[in-house]
Picture 1: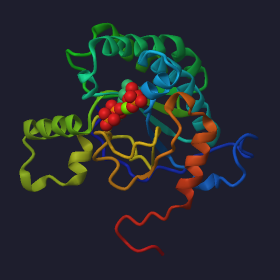
Picture 2 (picture 1 turned 135 degrees about the vertical axis):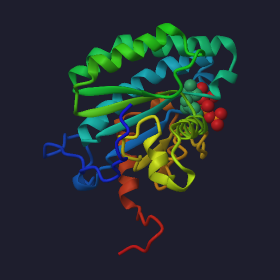
Picture 3 (picture 1 turned 90 degrees about the vertical axis):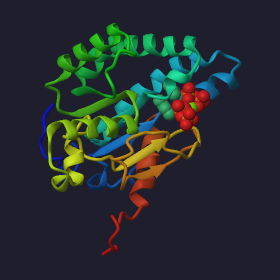
Length: 260
Ligand code: IPE
Ligand code: IPE
Ligand code: MG
């Protein structure tokens, strides 16, 4: 993995103007978040409300992923990171875990060509350890390879991802590298994250009304803006993405300083 400096100052999103017709005119094209991260939550509740098994909620979430990607492309967002499976989700019933492994593998098979045709580069973030079935790891590697040259949008699936695991892995590597303690600063840690080359998320969207982090991007979200739409993930569509971006554009980011 590249150990380049973590570049926090990426250029603003570049989009063809005018924005597509379905994008609200109030959105300021010059202040579109460069990186949006989503905690795709509420699949189980969506299914419960319909008397369906929880797994049907996960399956219905696929349409939301596809529409969120199209919305991100329409806005000119450069990075979209989706939390698909956490290091704590192994605690769920074995059937659900098994479903999620197969579902995510098949999602890649079903969608990667369509995403790639839209210029989407696909990446993964998380521990690629013995718990992830080998066939899923293989699909991930193939998908990264297939889409590596695309440049429009980097779509990252956080899979077997935990913020604490990521920081633990970083600390282990830093210790192994022999860097003297006095030389370690926050940029050092940034260089040992799973994707040191990604900018930090500007905006984090967690659906379903839950207002917690659940071990997502703990380091990277130090100064992210959070929005918590009530919509359950399977019902999430690009209009919800646009609404979240509008909410983001009302915020004043201060990074500990004073607003000018
Ligand atoms: C999010 O939906 C998807 C995953 C965690 C894989 P949930 O499955 O957490 O749905 P709720 O929170 O139970 O409704
Ligand atoms: C976070 O949601 C993980 C994913 C969306 C993949 P959870 O549903 O697992 O989080 P908690 O358990 O409600 O905190
Ligand atoms: Mg949940």
